[in-house]
Length: 247
Ligand code: PXP
Image (cartoon, rainbow, N blue to C red; front, top):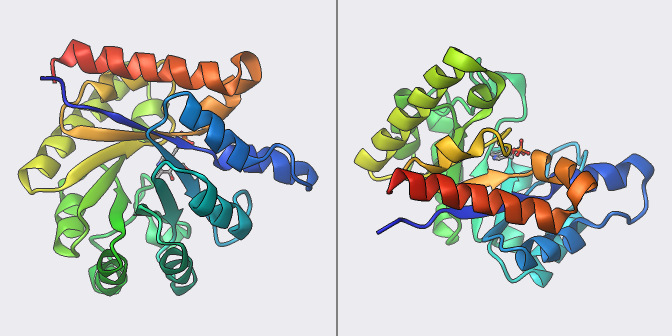
């Protein structure tokens, strides 16, 4: 049996375009409705500390108006924990926003902040929020995520997408190994960042990965083919990758 692979559509960059001019257009909540109609399994939005794209009001509207599960990407701060506890999204993905929080490659340095992150993650988990840690495909970070009680990890696919040729193969091998390690230690495994039509299939083929979160490419491609068609094509490529793997 092929294991299902969910698509979370990240709508941050609809808000980036809106904010370039102020006002209300284009509306990220309208984009979320469209994503739902196009077959997305969830909506992802990152409320940044500097509010450079998604605004507090967007999160409130997404939580109230969208039937799909909401995945709130957030920094590990008291302010963001308060937002999450107020809106109770289905999921919260803890991401680095400051230099000192991230590893050299870009994922959250969970291993370097276990004592700080454990109570914060615990409060979110206790509130019934499914917490994931956005980390590099590095076994040390996976073990640390498990140690602090996060049930889910999201593997950073940025380096895999940025490289070409052998470098990309090497990065993919790291993701494959990390996904297997996640399964072995009982973590649910997601992946995302930088995925496009060109890069999605090998990641979709990894059986232990159950969710991909994709945004920037879809919003960019929507300029040419529309958001609905871009999401449907991405979904079809994910399904092809998954079937090819026999996952
Ligand atoms: N997953 C996480 C944790 C992210 O922070 C982002 C970027 O906001 C994504 C997935 C989506 O990345 P992209 O917009 O490059 O598809």
